[in-house]
Image (tube, rainbow, N blue to C red):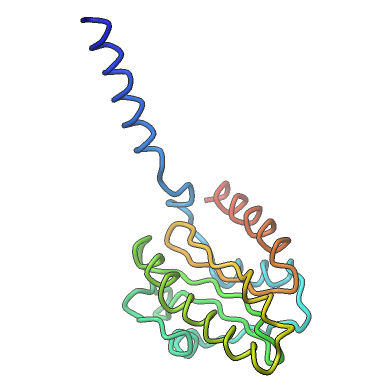
Length: 170
């Protein structure tokens, strides 16, 4: 009986430990969204290079993000927004207030933006659709990072590397 209780305690302890360790490894990540976005933009492959727009309020409105979900820095929403005028290629780095707001942005406005662009390009630029089908829409802590590039698989690898480097510096 004592062995049974000991085994049960070990199992419960292991389950609790696994549940407690299942959190986001990037939960404490701190990013300069503009610097991170420019680094990601410079290290990814694009057919038509996206241009960074220095107007986070306009970007939030364009992406239909509720500004109440965004973190602010120097009185402006924390949002790096870079889009191409000739393709759906883009890089967004969005600083949300917290992880729950980041998930809300990723699952709502960002998924909607990808779908609207995919539907639009399906009729007049079908060669661009695969970029949107494999678009990166990633939540890392309180950040949402979006990349639509010519090589999303390579961009995903680079993104993970940049996130891990930023985490080690935080």
